[in-house]
Image (cartoon, rainbow, N blue to C red):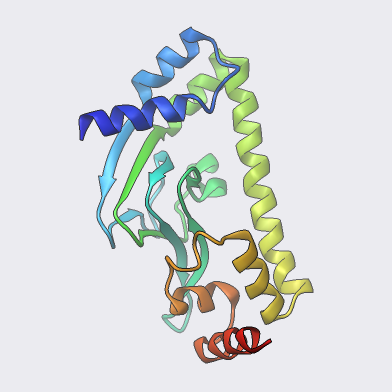
Length: 196
């Protein structure tokens, strides 16, 4: 397992091509790599997320529990994506979300403290921080706008087209929750598309 972890770390460091060897060496010492089982939580509602996560292997789902006690899925995080409630993480405030592993997962973690230190020491770190923030904003805006400007079928088709690798890895229950429709409605939409 150590060799596999080492391979994941080296692969992650390649995401920072503009960093100096000194920057990469410091970053290498700060990274923690962990294995999570299916149904394990990366974080839970009410916790302050101390570490940003980067998914090397596996799949997670972000959800919240509404006033009726229903789990509402707001996102899926797969390989090469960051596992975080970014706004709460940056402010170091308790998250309102749960981040649960849908599959056994390997996640690289970098602490909030180390990220902030990196911003102070190295200009490149600030650049990567900005790019991460821009990505999070884009994902959140796309999700909100999908509910404003698309019907359920369009949301499903867009999800399917943008995530062909996920469609067979997530349950209809989680997908229908994410799309904001009943499971039966999602089944009807899928059947209608198959018949076209």
